[in-house]
Image (cartoon, rainbow, N blue to C red; front, side):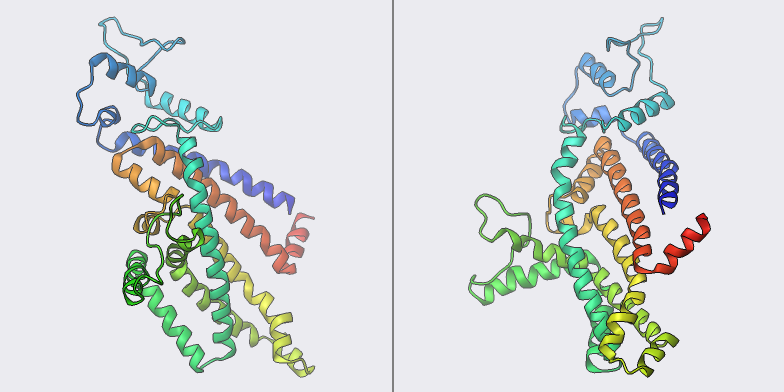
Length: 345
């Protein structure tokens, strides 16, 4: 197992380098001068512009940070490969650069915004796991019953709905219609997070965005759970357990559920990684101050240090979550653990 984990960690290196290289190339291929974007509509003083270019590494400087000029008195553009090496070196030291628009360190921006994304993802994944797995089990046990048809119908509707549309629908129903019907007595907040003078309790701000984020994934989890449980229930060892006189509940709890959960855990784990990557649509619809919305704003403003920093962090988080999911297989299925041990020996 240790050997496998070390091998997977080594595989992270080319992925990490590839992502940073692609992002760096995109930054330099997309039209637009970042220094002009910093100034906005203002006209920069030529010396101020040169200083900004030197600060952000677009032109060559000496060890003291002074601008280097050629024999004609012109500045020297820093080669792309050199800028990439400097960027990668700073990145490995935890320096993600400085925002063009705000002048704030990207590390500080991510540290401020990412906890909101993590909190939302945790609430959403709990909803997905409990509702999705529960609905899938009920649908499988009550096959062809009213409950099975209801689960199938609801999951089909959720899969067909775009996330942003579903989010706006929840805002309309629970934030506006419900408020009008009850005269303002009952309603849910439809945007943002709780503040010092919030009208609603802090936990209520998570309900609508978390349900929106979890909706489609919950539907897929229920479908996977149903199909896997039905497949496991037709295995020979389940028939043997029935022949021994075990109750249906005991068979499901002790034998069927654990094996049926393996692909479900895979999907939920991968989906949790995707949620931690920041749900741009959900966070934008609900004005949730997470990393997804921050990335969207940075893209619209062409604030490349923020884009590159957030995407790099997201890639690292997703790779770690995927590794954790793979390792969890060994605890759910002993055959995987024994197989890996045998191969290592």
